[in-house]
Amino acid sequence: MESDDSVAREKEGLWKGRKRPWYKQKKKLWILIGVCTVLLIIIIIVAAVVVPNSGSGEEKRDESSGSDQSRLSGVLVPNGAPSWLNPYVWQDIADFNLTYTNETVGDMPIMGLNLTWDDSAKANEQVPALNEAWGDYAKRPARGVNVGGWLSLEPFITPSLFNYDLRMGIVDEYSLCKYLASRCESVLEKHYATFVTEDTFRQIRDAGLDHVRIPFSYWAVQTYDGDPYLFRTSWRYLLRAIEWCRRYGLRVNLDLHGLPGSQNGWNHSGRLGAINWLNGTDGGLNAQRSLEIHDRLSKFFAQPRYKNIIAYYGLANEPKMTYLPEDKVLQWTSDAYALVRKNGVSNAAVVFGDGFRGLHKWQGELTGLDNAALDVHQYLIFNTDLIVFNHSAKVRHACEGWTEETLESMDRATGFGPTLVAEWSQADTDCAKHLTNVGWGNRWTGTYITPDGSGDVTTPRCPTKDNRCSCDAANAPAGQWSDSYKQFLKMFAEAQMSSFEKGWGWFYWVWDTEDAPQWSYKKGLEAGVLPAKAYERSFDCDLSQIPSFSDLPETY
Ligand SMILES: *[C@@H]1O[C@H](CO)[C@@H](O)[C@H](O)[C@H]1NC(C)=O
Ligand SMILES: *[C@@H]1O[C@H](CO)[C@@H](O)[C@H](O)[C@H]1NC(C)=O
Ligand SMILES: *[C@@H]1O[C@H](CO)[C@@H](O)[C@H](O)[C@H]1NC(C)=O
Ligand SMILES: *[C@@H]1O[C@H](CO)[C@@H](O)[C@H](O)[C@H]1NC(C)=O
Ligand SMILES: *[C@@H]1O[C@H](CO)[C@@H](O)[C@H](O)[C@H]1NC(C)=O
Ligand SMILES: CC(=O)N[C@H]1CO[C@H](CO)[C@@H](O)[C@@H]1O
Image 1 (cartoon, rainbow, N blue to C red):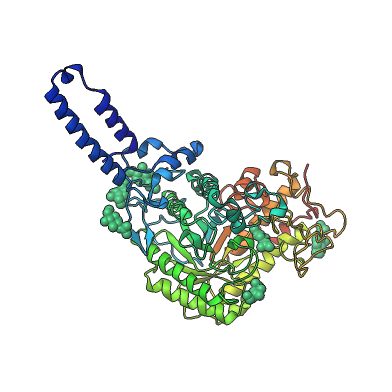
Image 2: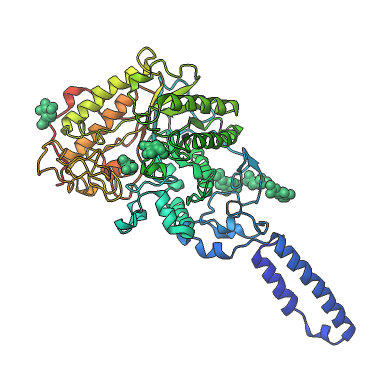
């Protein structure tokens, strides 16, 4: 069958291409007109059924995406196909299989995937290829990075998407899409198509990393009750990202970052405000919906093509167990674990968040789960007692404190057992724009004011605790960092790697940011404050090597 263009070309041929002699005999003319009319009717019917509805998509397509649009010629899509099955409306078609299919697995479309796959790549010479067993993560820890702020938005990672008058209250993906309404689709897809590309995964591989954690949210699968979220577009980007990881031998940690109702009330769950997951009137409903999401996801990711590449299957990012009833979260976690295993996700370790309750509290919990890992996120700067440490003390804490915590947690006698640090960064302040929230101040300068006043910090929480607590140097571009500040940042990173490798490994938060260079692995590499290869470090927590750093971030 045909695409729009070829039908148009054929029409031209029918009406314009005939030669004079045909018109001389009336009988032949009438036969010709009859034949043409019949053909035209057939073409109209066929066009109505199978010709792609390419109109609006063509306008939206981003020229800079680098996709070869000629691949669309001859691609047939039934009229009325939904956007996720219609490559003519996709902004980016690179590396997707464009052949239409409405087939699903676990009620999720496979559209865009190739039939075959190749697991022979290895990330580097230190690690096995995808089609070889990784082995015990306690002996060979994961070295990974998050592609955060991509399929689940975060204002501090992409402040350009949140560049509105504060009074408009655009603080998270929910309020952004509610405001953008029908434009949410083109704005978000442009971000999906450009913020992370194939090159991202090549660079991650080249940095000596071997794992990638991919945060995504429930609206990749389903939306409810008039949610303003962009439904399902992120799904195909998630699937393509996994295929790109495969190309570079990178194993994947699937991270469900936003759950129905919000599991923590934070902006990065999609919606800032109330926790309506296992809490409030709809708490049970949203917990059930979250299980339905995992039912579909786990059926999909139980397919053989994912056996070698999905190393970690995450149930819920950062459920706020300091607020939620612990027994309910534990029960939900057990139920979700059982469901995912029942559906055939067998190789991947199932991951769940530590809930901020303290690692020792996990001792003896959920002991019946096989190949499960506890996920702790280690940051100094969200804690008013730790953010004030000077740079030397920050490195020391990263070595001593976090090694101790990791070892305690890894030991079933004192903690849960298998433990992963799936988020950490080099940030030594909470100064990055929008980091605490869109429009909020920060602890560092004592300008952190919350709507209900509960967690307010109104005196400067930097090492000097005085008017030298400024964000100017902290927010300077990496190119302006002084040599000694760079030395600190590198040692701080290597200290953390060293501690977290006492467990099942680590995932840096995040691969890249628009500003916020202390949160970007990519910018850190460029500035020389991360090891060129993640497996070759110069500092391994020999405390005698820690110099007397200056207290504050410095520019030259
Ligand atoms: C899918 O197959 C096509 C054709 O062989 C290829 O060009 C493309 O790179 C493949 N996509 C992925 C993600 O491997
Ligand atoms: C899928 O497409 C086939 C034809 O290709 C059609 O017969 C079938 O009804 C479609 N199924 C759904 C669920 O749309
Ligand atoms: C693309 O998808 C179609 C439909 O599922 C399939 O028949 C075809 O083999 C796929 N192409 C590749 C290169 O895998
Ligand atoms: C829990 O739910 C109740 C009832 O809906 C609500 O008032 C409360 O704010 C919720 N808690 C949090 C932390 O959002
Ligand atoms: C950093 O803080 C530690 C602990 O408070 C202190 O012992 C040390 O002298 C400080 N170092 C510098 C360089 O100020
Ligand atoms: C209020 C709120 O939810 N703030 C969070 C927004 O997300 C950043 C990280 O991107 C957190 O640090 C904030 O606590």
